[in-house]
Length: 250
Ligand code: FPP
Image 1: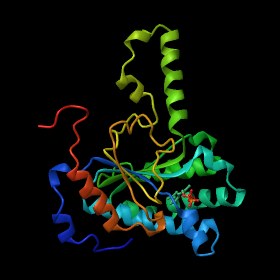
Image 2: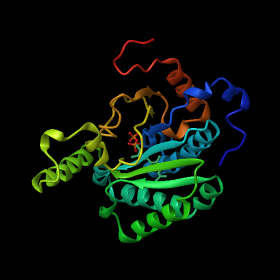
Image 3: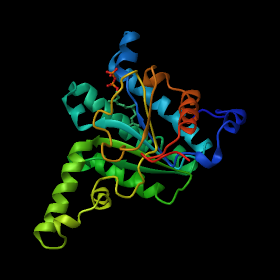
């Protein structure tokens, strides 16, 4: 993992009282980055892991407690078989080979998504990595894998309607909080900042419910080129923007 970046000078530009608790990353543009270099798409994803490590490094130094990164959506199964299996291998490598480094840095690793659809062996590897790092508290790294925001909301509605059917709750007593508590992200607070690379300006079904009030920062460069400085720039932008949740700013 790169060291000594961001510089203490860079960090002193931040308001320590306005560090977001949870930052989410849409790591977009790996394929385009690879194509521009006449390389297979998987080459871009591999470089993407390095960029993710830079983001992790920055999050640790800036004292961001939760960092989410979207690594595989349910729609990604439709990609060529070689790319799908390559992304599975990248996750396996990250959880088996990089785990020592993560553990040493005090990172608690979580994988969130529809994990039952993954290979049983990969599910076991995920469980082991989570178990090993569960007591770490420097940073919680949430890797969204086989994740789908709308499917998550459908599942939350199904769980709640079961409770209505059994008489446990009344439909008119359903609250926003109850919906949140039935999503895959139930145990985490909503992201305050989301960064998407590659110049694409949309959420693409990522944490639809959780991003209602999230500050969105779009960066033109492709994900493999993402640096600590880019993260820092997004954080400065976030700190300059008043977040008033529809109320009048004081
Ligand atoms: C979107 O770019 C990116 C992905 C679908 C995969 C992201 C994965 C990584 C960055 C690797 C890190 C993963 C783990 C498990 C640690 P794209 O392929 O859609 O790019 P394009 O829009 O240019 O085609």
